[in-house]
Structure formats: C-alpha cells, structure tokens
Amino acid sequence: MADIQKDERAWVGVVRRTVTFSFAFIVLAGVLWAFIDSIPLATDEFKIMAFGIYGAFLSTHLIIQSFFAYLEHRKMRRGGLPCSYTKSVALTISAYQEDPVYLRECLESVKNTEYPPDKLRIIMVIDGNSPDDQYMMDMFKEIFAKEDVGTYIWKNNYHHWDKDSAEKFHGDIMPDDHLYQTNMNTVPASKERNGIYEEMNEDIQYDNHMAHSGPYTIGMEMQDNFGDQLKEDPLPIFTEIEMEDPTRMEVETLIRTKRCVCIMQKWGGKREVMYTAFKALGDSVDYIQVCDSDTKLEPLATLELVKVLESNDRYGAVGGDVRILNLSDSYISFMSSLRYWIAFNVERACQSYFDCVSCISGPLGLYRNDLLQTFLESWYNQKFLGTHCTFGDDRHLTNRMLSIGYATKYTARSKCYSETPAQFLRWLNQQTRWTKSYFREWLYNALWWHKHHLWMTYESIISGIFPFFVTATVIKLFFSCHLWDIMWVLLTIQLIATVKALYACFLRGNMVMIFMSLYAVLYMASLLPSKYFAILTMNKSSWGTSGRKKMVGNYIPLLPLSIWWGVLFAGLLYTIIMMSLCTDCRLIDAEKNYLIYGAAAYAGYWILMVALYWLWIRRCCRKRSDYYDIEN
Image (cartoon, rainbow, N blue to C red; front, side):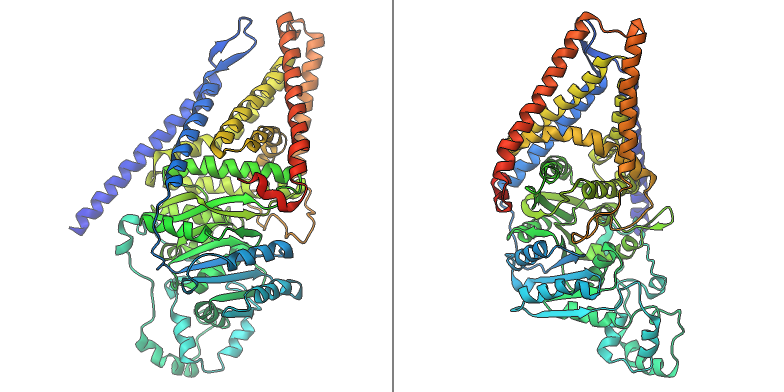
C-alpha cells in the first residue's frame, strides 16, 4: 500500500510539473509576442498616440492584482480568528551596530508585546563582540532588568571558533547535562560534521511531514558511558565533538532556560546571527518570530501572527505589515514609506490570497519552528555560483518554506515600524542588495512553482521580465528620432503610476498615497539601472547596508546610474540631431501640438505635486513624532 501511494504521489508530481511549466511557457511566450509585435488596439486620428496589446496586458495585470488584494483585505478586516494562547513563541532580534535610539524603541516595543509572558521568549543576538558593541547588551539589560535575563559574550559563533579552546576543553570531564545538550542535535551527526546538511525537499512537505522521520538523537544509554570514553580515547580533530565550539553549550543552555537572553558573538553577518538564535532554540518553542533591531512592534503584532498560523495547519509562515519609522527624515524615506505600503498591502496581499507570499520580511515574520528546523542547515549553507550567501536571508527562508509545500501568508492586522535609509546612497546600496537576492531567489523559487497556485508562476514571470521590457522600451523610444516618442513614454509611465496611486488612496483611505505617483521617476532613474549592476555582481556577499552608526562609503552603485543617464542623454541628443538633419524625422503640426500640450501637462503635474509635498508633507512631518499622522 505504501509503495502504491508513493507511486501515486510521484505521478501527481510529474503532472503538476508538466502543467505548471507548460503554463509558464504560455505566459512567457504570450508576453513576448505582445511586446515584440506591438499591435495597436487604439490610436488617434494622426496615429501619433497608440495603445497596444502589451499596454493592455499590463493594465489587466494591475487590475487583477489590485482586485485580489482587495479581496484579501476584506478577509483580514473581518478578523475573528481565535487564539489559544497555548503556543510558545521565541521573538528573535538581529542586531548590528544599531542606532541607540532605534534599538531602544525596538526593545521597549518588544517588552510591551501583548502575549502571555510564560509563552514568550525574547532573544537578541548581536553581530559583534567588541567593546564598541557593548552598548547594545547594556541597553538590553537595562530595559529587561525586571525579567529573567541572561547575557553572554561569546568569543566565537557556531561556524567560526578557536580550536585551542576545544583542545583545552577536552582535557576536562564534561558534566552529564552538557553531554546531553551536546548530542541532542537536530540533524544527523555524520551530516553535520562538515557544517552542511541538505534535506530532501520531496520527502519533507505538507502531505507527509507527520510521517517524516524525526531529528536524530543519541540514546540515553550511550550518554552514560560517553564521558569515560572521552577521557580514555579522545576523539580525533575531525569528529563532531571536535568540530564544535564547546562554549556553544553555555549559549544553548542560556537561551533554553532564560526568558530574556542577549548574546554578543563573533562577527559573521546577519545570517550567522539568525542561525545562532534558531539553532540554540532547537525544538524548545512552537513558533519563531524574526525581528530587526531597528523595528518597533505594535503591541498586538505577535498575537495577530500567531492567530494566522493557528488557523490552518497548512500555513508554514506569516508576515506582517511593515511601515516606515523615519519617513520624515528625507524625500527618500518618505517615498520608501509609500512604496512599502504598496509592496505589502497590494502585492503581498494579492500573493496571500493565493497562499504564496514570496517574502516574509525580516522585520516582522513568524515561522513554524518544527518546519524551520528541518531546513535550517541548508538555509544557512546556501551557496550561489560557489559563494556562500549572506544577504537575502528572509527571502530564502520563505523560499525554503514554500519548497516543502507549505503556504505563506500576510496579515495587515500585524504591524511594525522599521527604519529605512534616508540618504540616497545608502538607500541605493540597500536596493541593490535586495535586487541581488530577488533574482537569485527567483531561480530557486522556480523549482517549486508546481507545489503552489499558478498565480505564483504567473507573477514570478511577469515581475521577473518587467525590468528588461521597460529598459528596451525606453531605449527604443529615446533613439526613435522623434521627440514626441520620448514625451509619450514619460507621460505613459506617469499616467500608470498616477492610476495606481489613486487606487492605493482608495484601498488605504488616505490621500497621501497620491504621492506614490512620483515614485515612477525614482524607479526609472535609479532602481532600473541598479538592477543590472545587481545581476552582474550577484555573487558578491555582505550585509549590503552598513550599520546605522557608520556613513556609507560604497559609491560603486552610482556607476550604473551614470551609464544609464549617459545612454538616455545620448538618445535625446541623437533624436535632436536627426530631427534637424532628416526631413522624415521632423515634427508634423499635430505632433508639435501634442508635444507642447504633453510637456505642459507633465511639467504642470510635477510642479503641483512638488508644491503639495513641500506645503503638506514636509510641514506635517517636520517633527519625527508626527509620523503617525500620515501612517493610517
């Protein structure tokens, strides 16, 4: 019977793969045909303006996406999800050279989280153990002074440590409780020796997770004699006990026995920090919540996430609504706040309707711990083009959950406020890093399209090829020898952005979203060229965005912007020269009128919006404490 069921699952998998990738091919071919053929569906009498099949397709896509986002919000607003208050949650905070103001706000908000204290643990892991990092631990101890607090300054981390300490450690007899914790690993010892453990994704999925073999543990009868064996016949350097830092047991004991814990460890990057919290927790909690040290949680944020996971066993992870904490700092941070709202409440809300959210954002997400532990090692040891991946930890964690067939959700009822770069260069570095992880994870995500709704396949293709189509369209029109073509592409982009902004105003119930129409120029001038730079440097790994206590010194991402602006200027210059030399390129009377009216409308719109920004937004955001006024 078991063999028959296995064969049936295999056939179902083959059929789903065939259907999914056939659908993907049809979507890709259809979009390519619509873009290349450029068949006009409607034109004016002079055939100067045209609305083609590709434009109609993009418009339809935006309408469908907005419609399903609206339906998901209707379900969220109804609420009514119960909470048993029986699930244990570990709220993990990743910290790196954090601004003390943001860190204090983060820790105070975590302290005020409304969830049963006996079911909530708080773990902050600091990426760095130098005296310069001590202020973060001191602040943690100050804020949680009345709690059961444990702190530890770890000279190492799970993957980088001094072997001399192990040799000294093996000269002593380990206590029995340390023996127990050393051997209670969540993966087979033979597979963990080299630090790499790859699970079989086809075996660990929703349909057969309960039947999947549990974590390997060493029997208690072996532990009774293990200490004597260690004294008489020390293990060679390549065995598991030698390949582990013995002080990790102190870290694990602290995290598993104390309610509030702060660990300072050797620098290793954000993924190393997250790994420490996940690994040390083991199977001691039901859910693990992720949070960044610049994030301010609303009191009910954790509770609302727990409600979603409790509502359906198929849900493996859920993310919340991330708003911007420092939107009044600059134009960049203000525009980021609007873009965040669209990304979460339109794009991810639509994905949530189909149970396939592509990224559970790092500032606010909740995972089923039993599932997370099954792919923890492979998540940490992710490599791309031979390089160990550090950034994109949240997107890959989500992809791992999707890869085993579990659904991922989004709820706007759980909210937090997070810092965003206020300076252009730091923002550009952040966006470049995110783009790298997006395209890298796009390739990984494609392997699991067949396990989820066809919407995930469709949206992945559309969002993946969109930047390339926009680039080709802009370059083509800038070198078309007609000034009107350049004006037309600017007007079209602005019109689409304005319509989308008006819909966001309706969905959010706040007219501030009309300023989202200005984001289109920021995208065209900065984000679009940075995507190509990100693709070319995809295997370069680092935190990407520097700690908030340091100024950004990486100016390399400005290079693709300079090249892009040079190409557009060359196209404009080429068009002007050709219009003066070639009679076929000269404007007809109707085209001149269109150009004049179009330029006037475009300039007038921008003058109006900039004036509104300075008179309304800058004035009401003058003080940082006023940011709630426009964050409805």
